[in-house]
Image (cartoon, rainbow, N blue to C red; front, side, top):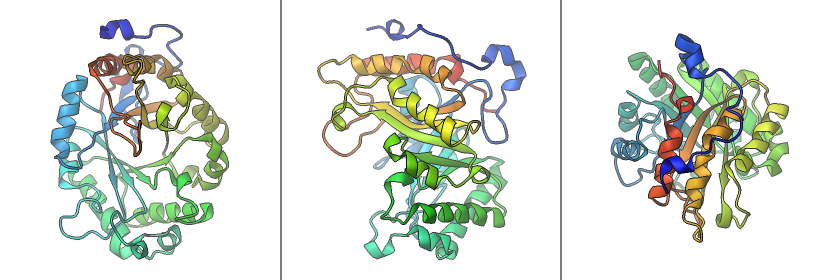
Length: 335
């Protein structure tokens, strides 16, 4: 099927000024918010390969440069050349020369022993300041001083799935605020603080209890997918995966913070190979109707378990995504 045939042109274009009407006013804000549309980004797997090469390969297939490149890190003690515990690896810094970076910092020690796993109580008490938090804060500060660039930083994404193992909701809030305040005490002013939840509304009570507060959060992100057989659910459209969570956040957490679809994607339907392409074709129309959503990051990877490959499955899906991300709404000036 041709990419043009998949394009969804029904329905309203959505609220807000269009790029052509704004002229020079479309420059990003101090908090990296694009006032005329939304950023497009992705998580690009690179476990066994070079981040720069994988980003370039993804961009070649999608037909454009990414605005945001999303990477993940743990809170292990930085040692030698170990990359997991280093915010802003050399590869990330090179990618950051012409992209924005979203760094997800998890309160885990991947591959570490049970005793090495940090808890929110320990973080809030400052027990990791000297060994981990201050080290990473200074790395980010140095990056900003050398390049003049800011980074999006998320502390413990999807924290609603990590209680009680990491601690209580109240301990999470204290830990988040401690990390934020410690960065501020060290003069780190090039971080855009991004609070990322699953978006699963069965956890709505946890979201309210784990929100650090408006003064500690610049952007709010949520990760919602069409899991289909991965979680044995009905097939959900892009709108069905996003709208209910968007509306709940606007009503219960913040009515004005910029929002980020920090991970979005769909499984495949083996019986209907074109269905994934059709799903992506809905993205621009729906995105424009979600008030305040200023970034959408595609998850091009798999989750654990059978039927859980959420990566683009075939050329029809890639052609559909290429059409989606060529929309002017998703092509905003970086400067």
